Amino acid sequence: VMSVLLVIYATDEFGFSDKGAGALYGWWGILSSIWTSIASIFAIDNVGSKRTAIFAILAMIGSRAMLILARNPETFRWAVLVVSPMAEGLLLPVFLVGLKRLTVKEERPMAFSLNYALHNAGGGIADVVIDIFRTWQVKDPLGFVEVFGSLATPT
Image (tube, rainbow, N blue to C red; front, side, top):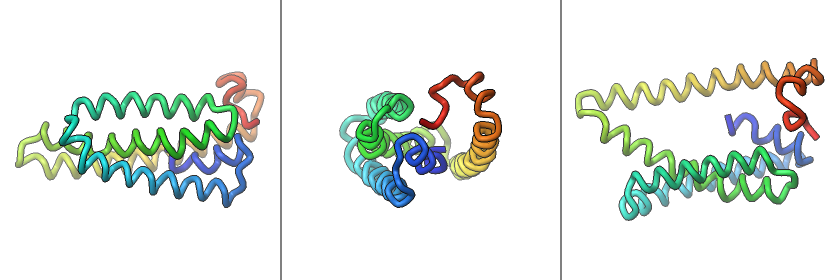
């Protein structure tokens, strides 16, 4: 969902240019990958998967709250370039370690295949749902605000 909405949210809510929002999205992806490497190499082995998972989940909640409640580009940029990549980068390896630990050797290929399939299905469903809500927001802004409140409208 983040990959679909980040550029739209940055341009609609904070006035980023298309090029600026695209650069923000690119750096978000790069930084998420770097944090995934850090988690894979250092955090899980030295801190433990449970502690890393708890920290990453709390960081993810914090990053999403920052993204939702941000009222200026600086807070939004901080959430996108620091907190969100760290949380997402730490969560992915912890999740995969957990998936490995909670399955027996014979079931593991099916579990990872199912995980991959569900991630892809979730992405496809999210795109359709986002399109529906964006269309509703454009065609009936007052109805949209009535249901979701004034925070759900572009400024």
